Image 1 (cartoon, one colour):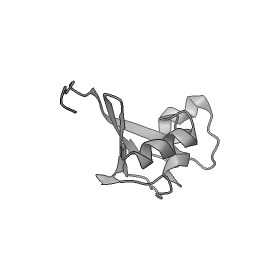
Image 2: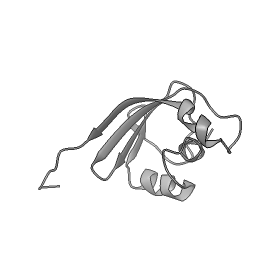
Image 3: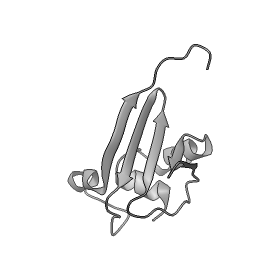
Image 4: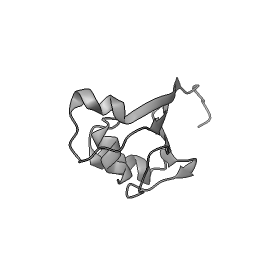
Length: 92
């Protein structure tokens, strides 16, 4: 499954276009490598998302059978590894 589709299905991002923008800006990594929205992901991959001053690291637990996932099932698609607020850096 494509990275942008997984992020949308899991509700880690609100829209596919947002996932693409984050990828294009270098704010998403898969297995410690910068990723494009079209990156194929599989179970066990680690996804790192940087949104503003917030870092979220998740591990893919299950790939959904389709693009549409019910809200109550979306959280079962991943495991949260880390969820932290990044320190304010006045020089960045």
